[in-house]
Image (cartoon, one colour):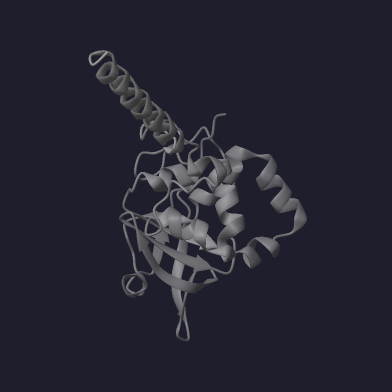
Length: 208
């Protein structure tokens, strides 16, 4: 009888311990999802621009007054050329400049991608020219198919190119310079069968 009592007492203690362990596990918080468990990516909800804010394309896309230029340039791959960081200068017409074009000219540019690319190439020149350096030039030669040249002049204190006023100057990024102008520079007649631009890139040729 003396042996049975200690044995029963041990069983009671063991049962009590098991009960405490069960209640304790029920109260424990559930484990958090593993750190490496795939979660929804933030960019899936709001994709971020692939262009750095200080890049030349990033500055163009961030400027609401260049939205028409950005849309047209993107549609024919000109923004991609600018992303390559080549050393050139762009004269980007603002929205008012495109709005001032007659409807027939604008429709023609939008419907003919080769012509549009050539027209935009007519706003780009080799080299990085800030306004002070441009003032020392009498004319500049563009990347357009005909290597169109435009005179550089001063209208009072305002720098002009081909009669277009520079309304915002010296935006820099990606090894390039950009000036905003108030007029679209329409290049000479388009003929894709002739030569290449001074830098050897067929800027006016577009192939889908």
